[in-house]
Amino acid sequence: MEIADWRNKIDDLDEQIVRLLNERAAAAVEIGKLKAKVSSPVYEPKREERVFEHVQQVNPGPLTGGQVRDVYERIIDLMRSLQKQ
Image (cartoon, rainbow, N blue to C red):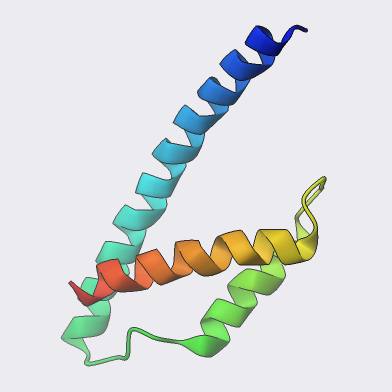
């Protein structure tokens, strides 16, 4: 494949990632609503740690486990902010 082909592939992957991030965000919003009803805290460090462990375990590479965790720390931070709204 040529560079243009790889870039087209990346564009397609980016579209999939954005769709999935929005699906995840919608789920986080719904969880936030449920937490608000029962006065549960938005920040759940044990749950977040389980998410980090899970995504690192299923990571096939070439990203390292630490890099995947870095990405997910930002994702979870954004999802947490959605839950607070």
